[in-house]
Amino acid sequence: MPFNRYKLEIEQELKAIIGDSDTHYYQMMRYHQGWIDEHGTVQSGDTGKLLRPALCIIACRAVGGNYKNVLPAAAVLELVHNFSLIHDDIEDQSHFRRHRRTVWSLWGQAQAINVGDGLYALSRLGLRRLKDNGYPADKVLIAMQLLDHACLTLCEGQYLDMGFESKTDVGVEQYLEMIGKKTAALISCAIKTGSFLGCDDDAQCNSMEQFGWNLGMAFQVRDDILGIWGFEDKTGKSASDIYQKKKSLPVIHGLVSASKDDVATIKDIYEKPTIDDQDADTVTAILDRCGARDYCENLATDYLNKAIAILDSLSLDSAAKDDLRQ
Image 1 (cartoon, helix red, strand yellow):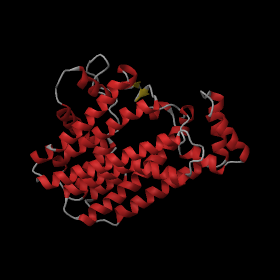
Image 2 (spheres, helix red, strand yellow):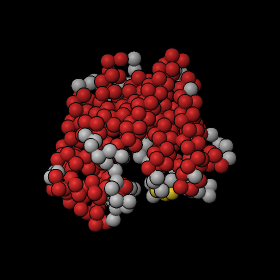
Image 3 (tube, one colour):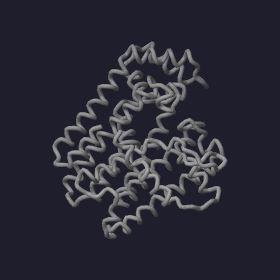
């Protein structure tokens, strides 16, 4: 993947922003990043896809900018993403992420909240490093505004997502609004920030932002598909989001499109304290029967096609454009 070529530089910038304090507080941050184990021993763990920082870098290249200058912004986007994951793990009561114990499951919810808050604070401080790379203060301030707006939108999306847990009448449009805020907003921000720091063409930056939003929507819909029909050894998640009773897009489509009896069955299973293998198989069979997977695959393709159409309409560096296509 083209993203891997930036991994070392992104991680170097992340480590510079987090700093070298050896207190346990910062060790918890490093643990979540995958750099050390729970005992503080250095390791080469799963640091995640680094999707958002890589997209920021490639967007900067695409519009003709020097990607090394935007490394602070790229790293900051990963910090924001990780602060949201730490809090998300608490809210979902998830014990594992990336095949390892989550921060809260090791050190408690209160400390995990504090670690997430610290990563967010560091993201704000990290953006100031753009000044060291030659960006004027007004440019840095606008980059901060882009990030703040994306963070607030992300939190709005998480609010909606948590609200859906107790509802049985969530519609497809409501769900798409939620993932637009929770997932697509930060991906869109990554691409707009990279573009904004790489050129002064507002129209082009706005088009890149729309490209990013459609890409983010496609990414999340695809992730929902993997959450039910994916494989644990490839995704790092449970084989099915059904076990966690998540109302992801395939399930919502099933609740809207399945037969009356099948809808009742899904609701009955989701009301159980825990879901066993037979329950998960039953729900999956219902979703297959009502065409939920095909619906989601087609929707993801639609969003991706919109993103590619926007990309094709822009005059961009050809190599970077090819990277964005991938």
